[in-house]
Image: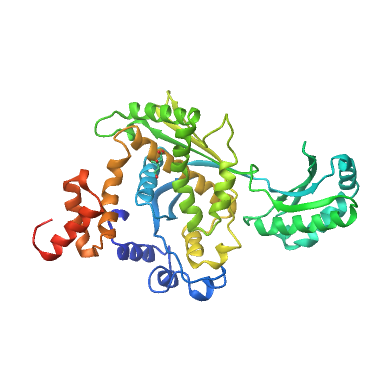
Length: 424
Ligand code: MEV
């Protein structure tokens, strides 16, 4: 049977239509209709002058807690979807990803200045008025409780420099949470500031350090599913473990290792209309001197398997915001069987782990460039202006002399091809 990646775009769409994964309206969004109609885009940002499309593809072979999925990814880097699919395939052969998710809430900070001497006043005020503060929070966003969310906890803290804060732990339900959390924080801040003479309210805002919204995924790969042309699977597995360990101790390497994880994560986050900046801020806030990567790779000697784990803050939502406005985001969520926020977190964490595996396996075997080459050649040929019918010949020409495969060569090859003066 022809593999998904071997089909043309039209054939892929026909297959998805045939399988019932998309309907005729979805087909329009993906083809004729502009993916983001001007009427919608113009109301999303100030001074809108156009849209900025990036390719949307489906990463294949994901088996996550027993559910087989093709995962939508929006990304401009040529190799990211292929790499994630390749790793997911190896993982699926040993049973797929196992995930767990914690969604315990997002913290908002209501910050006061110059109150070190009055800290006890603030603490006593919050203690005495907790029921009222909870009421204010609830009334500022009454529908949240109906969606399973709400204010979970209130605490008070102070810093050495004289700042004091009320921290509100808020469960945003299935929303990403920025709007609900900030609305509640500002309402509570107003209520407190009006009643606390002498305390200067500095700000009220959610924290993107969301250690309570995190996802874990585990993947196992049999040694037999890891070999390359010139390396045994067991050796590959042990080299992956060493590479992951090196990332733990080297700040230079950990940045790159983590970029490989983010290749997958950001692409799904973008495709599903979530806030990529929020996810990046939250994920990187997890690190300190002792903890530099979200993934760990070990060996299960008994089962002769490589074992990978990811544990990462991922404050994703599955409703509201751009997820409800962007047609492409709605379609991506539909392709994932309309997951709730927890399920989406599990999927995104799995894609991050797969991307990491693909990158590190390539690095510790034949290097990253070999796998990238074909896609890079295609991208060079397109940058040189090759049309669809010219692409294959320019790529063949570039592949014949990889050391000189650059934009200038691609242009020269295209020129020859068009003039018919020299075969590519
Ligand atoms: C390239 O986009 C990502 C990698 O550099 C990640 C890594 O080095 O692990 C290949």
